Length: 340
Ligand code: SF4
Image (cartoon, rainbow, N blue to C red; front, side, top):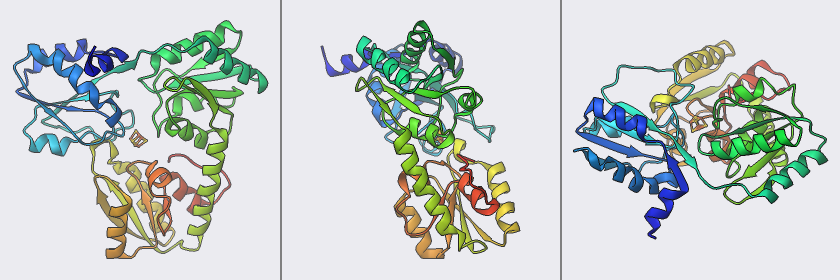
């Protein structure tokens, strides 16, 4: 069995709806776009598109979320349809514009079953914490495992509240409505990214079921460590209130948040800041150094992706805040706000 075949079998790729839409749209050229970890699925989707007479282009750009569709690149390449693999349309999109390019989303689900010992380990850890009511959530890809975890815990007698929509690194709203009613949250996820976002939004215990490494672990400690670090950055920024502020504006369709930018700008100016509007398709440490060398501002707020200040830019030599952290800075208060 080839490596390509292997990866196609590890995931269920829901192509039916997209195929029907492509028949209606009859595009001449499509661009495949996926997060790096799912780019090997280009081969699987490619095969399914062979019934169409179209030219397929392959994007090498990262895809940190469905907020991050490379529309400029697709426009320059003369593409009619972007086929984005692995996410649904971005929930928090502010700009719904009349675009020439159609973006179609191809849902993908991870197929691997969770082992009985993993589920029993999770149940044991919840019992140790005295948990009776719990939420269970996941991203779109781990939906099958999320359903299995929820059913298992229900059979064990726990009260389980399931998020009706997948979580994102900046979106935990459907879980947080239950936050006061549950004893803990269970997140089905590979890696720290999604559990950490929940740990910044809720103070409850967070247990992670990782279907890729088949292990259960607690994300609470890491989230608390990051929270301490973020409060330290906010503290450092206090002495700079009223200074020169860089408001970083995202260039990708889902990351251009004009209502948020407008709100933060007015808030900043009311507190005596001089706000500089800085555009950036993707804000890296290198981009920040470059603009800081040019403008020499006192601090920055990233409005595109609230994870950038936390995950990628925390080592920058000046405070780089999320929108929520900036609100805490200027309004005061002890409660951490994530993401805005
Ligand atoms: S966390 Fe960042 S990359 Fe992920 S969906 Fe939100 S804005 Fe996009």
